[in-house]
Length: 316
Image 1 (tube, rainbow, N blue to C red):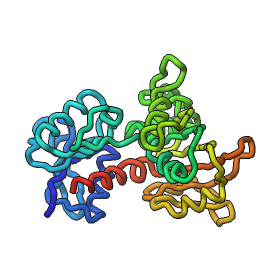
Image 2 (image 1 turned 180 degrees about the vertical axis):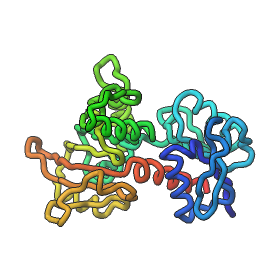
Image 3 (image 1 turned 120 degrees about the horizontal axis):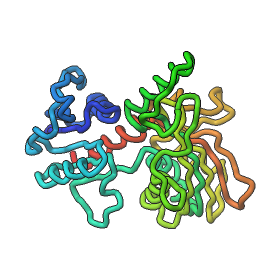
Image 4 (image 1 turned 90 degrees about the horizontal axis):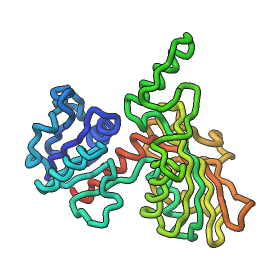
């Protein structure tokens, strides 16, 4: 029996990708409601071989749906989720509003951030074999983390760069075209950004409470695909060869060896792919048990939308 599915914000990059994946897979969809803000209500959207009209979320009756995918952030988003839960709708919360709540919401699944999802996918199978002591990570985050506006700012600044036009920074704090920005969120009192703190907290929750993690999160001039340089120190014996064997046996991960034709993988090569890719896997000789590696994935599809649809299967 099919389910009535609502997706908000359906016109966003993530919302659109969720629609695409729901149409591509065997997810049991009976009715699909594309929810959006007032100014975009009535917009035609594709869902498989049919078109659907975007519906203003403020006018939507949640009694019509069984599952809500919610991509928004902030208090307004949380209010909408609360309303849906009150009307017995099951919610996949892509904003992670309840990820650290002590109170369990049986009808709500809160998803980690894209970078945490990528990193956890690599760390979980390692943690199961050898206790992780410490992780040092630098993220290289695509502008699509800020949605279409972020991608547009990179495109517009790149175009203006070559004709020497003045650039405007409306999405990012500094010029993003032909530049890197070592800040992806607000700074906290200790000098870390909120996204760096959150990544450490998410990994503790998703992989292991005893793991110590330090991160530097960097915005880079890439449209799609987050990358991460990762160093992992273990409490017990494990090396790069063992890590490769573990990862090859893990569904959803793809290993690229330096001996292969590709040698390593970059964000430009994995846009639109479902897998999370690992390359440049090597031993760290500065500690007793340590490895370093590079990880990258499509931050819209592989790290967020696909994970959200898979999570929703527990409600189906």
